[in-house]
Length: 493
Ligand SMILES: *[C@@H]1O[C@H](CO)[C@@H](O)[C@H](O)[C@H]1NC(C)=O
Ligand SMILES: *[C@@H]1O[C@H](CO)[C@@H](O)[C@H](O)[C@H]1NC(C)=O
Ligand SMILES: *[C@@H]1O[C@H](CO)[C@@H](O)[C@H](O)[C@H]1NC(C)=O
Ligand SMILES: *[C@@H]1O[C@H](CO)[C@@H](O)[C@H](O)[C@H]1NC(C)=O
Image 1 (cartoon, rainbow, N blue to C red):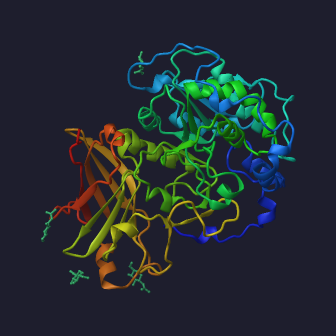
Image 2 (image 1 turned 90 degrees about the vertical axis):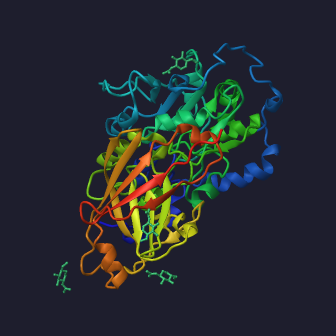
């Protein structure tokens, strides 16, 4: 199966989906099935924006923006050394009922003796898999207000995970990282991204939704919970102090992440956007998005149960495993995009390292190559557009489509280099072939081999810049396999 938009054409009625939400997986699929219809955020947002000051109880006491970090509690923690995985405490929003299914994603990335954190559940599970992170049962939240109609009150419980995690008082925690039970984190890259920031300052780091219909309904300025967000220790200390009040003040906000962002507004800390956190509020085929990753390390993927598998012809879980295999061999380079042109044939090649290669048997500018192909649709209404980033249509004309190759395997070669191979999954058949001469030559290519040096994680502490590649001559061995070399310029100090 090649990337296509076929499955994305089905239109869903907008009104049935108003509160169908992306964030906590606790909320989406089941509630969607039950047909929950809540419109609180639609009606509530303008109220908050324009009239909330008139409503008793909506304004916090005092001035949270003025409280110095650690104003109330002087907490000792390690100020020294580069941030590593031990400095992160994960808080994963789960439920006893859904964990049986969701644990498979978590187990793909969670390393029992390396990672610190808990899955927070609504009740005691029975039994608990040994390969899962340890669990905690959240405390009772029935005393809090929740005014988002029939939507799930578990948003309150999940919003409080950061507080309950903080109050465990674990040593040397620099960052609290929140995620859903269907979030896959790429932990080395997460650490690398967080290590850019001074954990002694107040930081709220994450990213927003891909679908404009989501950002309009919820927010452009919050860290979406499924993509995951990170809160530095001093900010968590302040958040914990006011969180319970926020939960009541933002009682008509749908999701846990929205309630947290309400609190962040009171503290006065904006979201620092990092483009590697992926909420994945999309439907259909994620191919186009992952084949054109922004120039930033891959930190998370979410909603893997909601769209098609990342690779054709294998299951969702196996797809993620495959991507992780490439990722492990060179974390910083995973999904990094490079382009090369062969001017002797006028070919354009786009490489998304560890995922896919696209071959166009004509010249395509780098600007166009950098834009994701729209193989996917928006989250709630399955519309073609709009997204919160540029997209370009995937043509149905075989004479405009790229010939697509998918990641197959990776080999570590000597001197800190990797050799990844990509193969064609579906030979274009008679109906989907372009009969033009330039395509006939392109169809003879059966695969690519890409040689690249390890990408030094320090690259991501410098100004971001795409790397370039070149197509090697005369080494078509085995027949029909093109060799590409990604150039890795030395780091400037
Ligand atoms: C992380 O750094 C701390 C020092 O801040 C050190 O004690 C700890 O062993 C390190 N952990 C890992 C996994 O490197
Ligand atoms: C490549 O494209 C250029 C400009 O479009 C054209 O002049 C040239 O003849 C083409 N070369 C080949 C080998 O097709
Ligand atoms: C379909 O393709 C095969 C080879 O791929 C070829 O042998 C056959 O003649 C084609 N059929 C038609 C109707 O073009
Ligand atoms: C490949 O050969 C062409 C001429 O045939 C040359 O212009 C180009 O620089 C060569 N590329 C590499 C990577 O050697």
